[in-house]
Length: 370
Picture: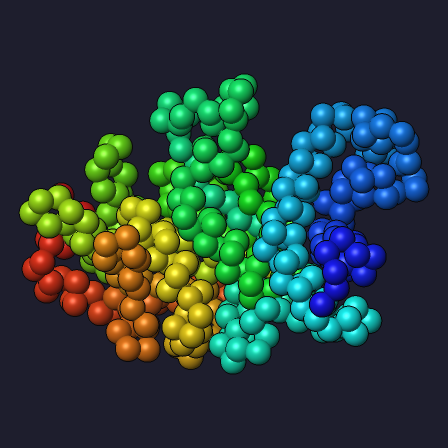
């Protein structure tokens, strides 16, 4: 172990920093190199001069470069916070690892047999670009400090389903430290040709999710704020499934709705929805939670291979904990799939399990003939 503040430790910290910068996407890496005066092409004494130089090269406004740089630095900071300490510690203990790029690239969970299953399912290949578009709170519902004009501005204050966003970023970073992860609100996201797009939160508060609704075999029936938005599956005789509550208005369970689509351009899209925030978090945990998530992901692959699919299962809250079943032990309520953009077909239907459960609100079908 090297001494604190020693030359060896400084060298290791610089190495970890450079590795994190190299792990950024090309456009983010350029912004960071300009900010830290690492780019010979834009080498000037002040940050303002360097950013203006980059703006001239890219033919955009300087404020656009500053905005991109802020996001790039957020990503870099997150990578250092989540991956830097463990990487530096392991390197200090074994200095030889500095000269082993392959070992440096190894995911934290590389030694776990279930890690590879999860990386394959979520398409977390080395260097992949992952964009997360998280639902956002309507403007009239946001706290004052969600506004950039507020003196105590907090960017994430406008994000809904924040628990799910943090969970995804943490799990992805542990599974695949070399992927580039960026997060956006729907209002600030534009197509960036990401390898993986994860859309967090259902249609009411996520405009990006709404863009995919015409391609899906279900929808969430909109109700006023404060009421449930039940799941409707028109192709199954108008099946409607909604959250369950106790007589004292305590939430028993929600529906976790997980969708995978593959776009022609090659991007894999994951839509994480639910009638309430519990279902959204449950959708993420069902197929990402260590060994249990790996078993559930294998269950999906065995049934539908690489086809587009929609999974619906229960998500329960027990105290402050989110409980989602292992699909190999408790099969899903619904599993629909399609290949080659054909209509979705039902592969698994256990909705009777929900229909016959009398512990909460009644589950029913809508008669569309009226």
